[in-house]
Image: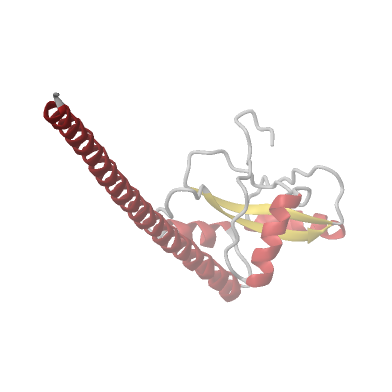
Amino acid sequence: MNFPATAGVRRSFLLIVFVAAAGVATSTTLWTRERRHIQRDDAQNLALVATRIADELRVRLAQIESTLHGLRGLYAARGGLDRTSWDTYLRNLGQHPGAGLSSFSYIRRVPADSVPAFLEEARTAFDPDFKIHSAGSPAELAILSLQHHYLDKPSAIGADRSSRAEWMKNAELARRSGRISISPPTSTVDDDGAF
């Protein structure tokens, strides 16, 4: 009878299975814990990056809004804007407004029946060669009258924006609220002069 040998083999086999199972369980537990730590660290890093980006955007928008308030003050003090005061003010800021802003633009709303008078005024105040580029015959035009570019792009002076519903929605919001309004990207003039 070899019972003692079989019992010893069984015990050894059970011990091996137990040690292997304990090793797998311990490895799985440690791996799961480490994975949770990594995910938590990634979530914290993402939250920090998102907070930093939001803070940078807040600062940029505040700078832009401050510039716009200055332009509104200039407009109120002078009873309007002309090219010289516009360019002088924006040139003397001494700062680039940051990524994402290509220009400051002054849009003048002009009823269709006042276009000839506006053109005469625009040629005196803005540019002697001022021309209006309009698609259609709207009741009220939204004419880009002054523009200060920060990127190397051609000017869209004289462009009527009244036919661009997405752009006008944001312009109207800015006008009514007196605050900055961010529109989707808008095209200006292409290299060939087309809108």
